Amino acid sequence: MAILLGGTKTGNDSKRCLYWFNTGAGGAYYVHLKTNMAVGNYFMGTIEAEGYNYGASAPIKSTWCYYSPGWDTSTLYSVGYKNHYTGFTANLVYKSSDNYIVLRGYTSNIYYIGFVINSFTSSPIGFFDVGITASAIRSDTANHY
Image 1 (cartoon, one colour):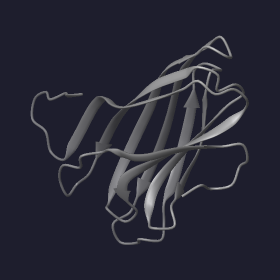
Image 2 (cartoon, one colour; image 1 turned 90 degrees about the vertical axis):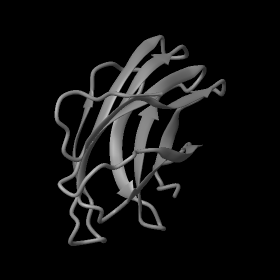
Image 3 (cartoon, one colour; image 1 turned 180 degrees about the vertical axis):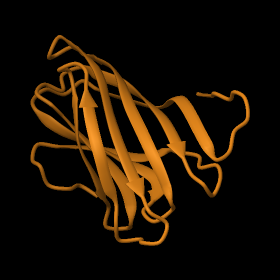
């Protein structure tokens, strides 16, 4: 893991390869990535998955963007998603039952899929050290956490 720093920094954090996800299972699944970011911490985030999906014979480059206002611990804005390839698609940002941000993605074939998670966060209140605390796969669209 590398923390990338450059110039003057005021509350921004960029990380490359903060988490590695891989599996050898087969079939279509939703991947849930629970973060250490509590809803209501007043920050904007961009999380990116980069890798390869062997079962789908396709590269992975997907991005989740979200905003969590500091004045409201019940609100999480899912700003958008970008999927550059078909190996994995970012499709949801949701709040877990214990108030943490969870990223959800979908793949048509999870047979030997592997990706790293990169992040960029921005907060007017200072540095935030993003981490993935848990991951799960489900065959349905229900929230896991």
